[in-house]
Length: 614
Image (cartoon, rainbow, N blue to C red):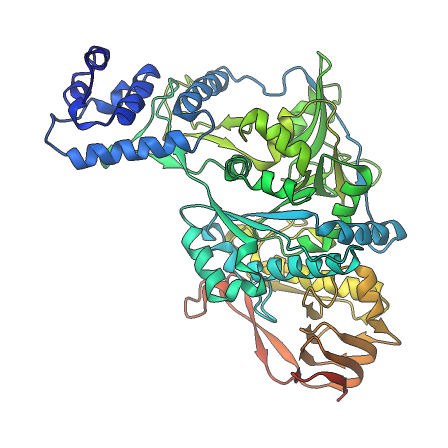
């Protein structure tokens, strides 16, 4: 029951005042927070006590969730919103007073001695790492109605992104444990940040597939909550137009991963267990694990607190640039600057041409691919200061140039890669640049949007993402000494792509280049029309000439040699129209499917030594 003091406090809001008898002391405190922060409009339409009481209590349940899931609660959210909205209205430049320069980092070229050394160092470090997958999104933008991590990474084997990620972590875990001198086995923790949209479906995918071979105890799902929408420049919370007892909410962004990790208590647990690194990655970059071992090696060698994985970036390309910003007051930070902000920032800082390519043919500012490696100790210390809160931004769509009204409600957003913005200048923040063909092929765009991409720019579609995997695997085998025939060009779903030999392998077959080189010898060649899937660990390729389809699936205790001339009719690629609804979504968004005409398939389930030749 409300006290007299409470009663006086709420007297200016009669609709709420008459309902105080319904509320618990905690709910009365939440009501006070709302009123103190200019939110009395939320109660204007409330009827007297006894009408819609259930709905009123549901409203306070939602307010309690919004308050508890945001660092500092709703009061902090509204205060920050007012400040950012005021800055937005006057057009304040977030980089005012800062000058950009190219930060220092490591440029790695695949297959060089330095790259191989970094990969080996990274494998040693892997058992000291925790992996965090940011997977809060559905595949709607792709034209796929499921969760993105359930999409096949490639359709030769049908392995989905989540399975590939887990198998890659397990391969690193095994290799790292084998190297470690103390002989102890350590399981690498794997965290998945989900959302209301993806949580139950991610859990179902894991459980239906027995966690793809990972121990369920290694996997933690952390669900992010949405944040309240804002109706105007005064940061008044937006009510659902169809329900006066519900606040409109929208996703806050993948920056929430930091506050979720902080509040979960996992960071403390990992430090106590002797872990040293936290590695963050996105949900649909099928090439990422090609880059992780070497990048982890760079973090360990250079002792980076923050290491951003990056690729060479063309000037003005729609990808953020990793930039050192130095303020007139001496402050400096190394962060991602979005591509649409980098060009004007350079022009305003004495670079009249803005964002241009240098003599390498690329921008001097490396392209951010949103994969971060953080040193655990300094990361935990920083989050203890901030509670995991990340610098936010707001992007309201105004009705007109007066900037007094919004077209629709907005909200605060945050990005995972903005973590370094709060770090002290003493923090060691760097980057590792890898070849694009090796490290970066995100699957983001639906076929229609991808087909409209200007010629020469990346499509970032399911089509290009799958083709990039075959290209990377073909180039890796070429570097290992295999003659892989050059690709042909083909138009699929309106996108011109290079079609290489369809070569795939399980991570346990070859996680790093030096391991792959040990498994390839003699004179080997693979024709462009060939398909090869290696699903075993101890499979050795020696003097193999492949012209067709070859699938090898073997248990760990089977040693298999692939050699001789293997020739058959193979698999053909058939074009599929993405508008053809008789074809499953995950196939039609690629624009092709395989017709498995003929193949040599070997499944070896017994230990021993085997030779596979046609």
